[in-house]
Length: 187
Image (cartoon, rainbow, N blue to C red; front, side, top):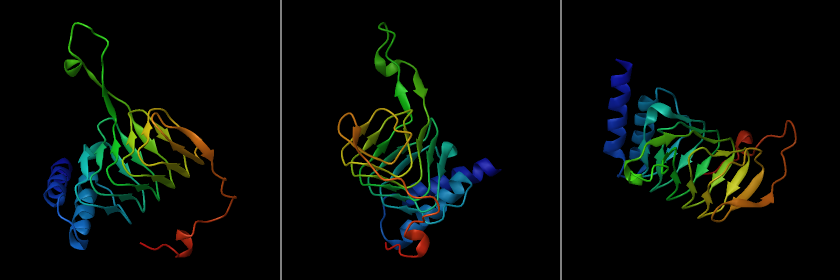
């Protein structure tokens, strides 16, 4: 029965996917809560965000998914707390095989590889993150980057095609809190 309810929640999400406005953002969040079977506190989800396979999707607190993004969770996708995903991003958790030269790539097996996005990550507009990538905490991915490998240690700005480290970010001192925890967050 729970699986049927989650599928209905996903269908409800799809119904409200294209419409914008405060009510529709709330509709999408509540529908995704039903589809994933988990509370999604602070989730902002813009219009036209296409999500595939909510069964393998884990979303943390205070995540924003902006308009026109494509989120594939077939291979497993974990998004940490306080993550901002910009407009037009693609996060892919599958890839086509291409090893058999006798078979067109389109018809070769698809492999699944999980993607992990840690806490406190900002993903700029039009970023593509490919299957199997891990982004460490407190990282920034520059707009237009194509992330083909992992940056698990975090505290880094990455960008380019393919993405590479541009600069290291300071590590937050032990016990130091974010401005959000002090109630200074503005939407």
